[in-house]
Amino acid sequence: MISWHQWLEVISSIGYGVLSSIVPVFHTEAFIVAAAASNLLGPVELSVGLAIGHTIGKQVMFLAVRHGKKLPWLNRGEPVQVPAGSWRARWRRWSARTARLVENPRWGMPILFVSSATGAPPVYGVVLVAGTTAMNFWAFSLVMLVGFFVRCIVLALGTMGAFQGIFG
View 1 (cartoon, rainbow, N blue to C red):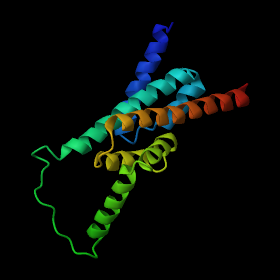
View 2: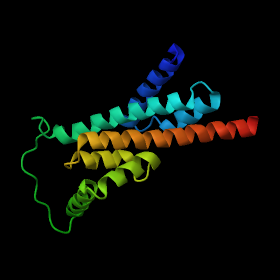
View 3: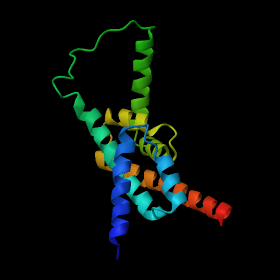
């Protein structure tokens, strides 16, 4: 049976996970280290909460990118023609290649998992690119959830082990 204290741990972790997934200056890693080092939150409760919160935040970003262009105040009309050698043309080509890679069934989900589990490539950018593709929303959500959980539990257990080893 889960105690009310454990529920509060999970809920607070979910809240921080949502915040840190949308506002990059709130670092999840710092939260994990502080919570695990102080033993204020259990590693499983911490990891589950942060993974759920991160996934919710990234789902919001994914859907905002995917459906944001339908909002009338964001619709700019026809794309502007740019000279072939300009930085905007290179940016568009790079964006199109990246979107094709993320959308590819063979590479898209592994890239998303590695990004969410390790932070390389940056999750924020991968989510923004994924929102522009035809990637399945529920598959995206599941991969994000599992990847973030792996990232959080490894860091939480590693931090706790390090602090127990140092401070006994």
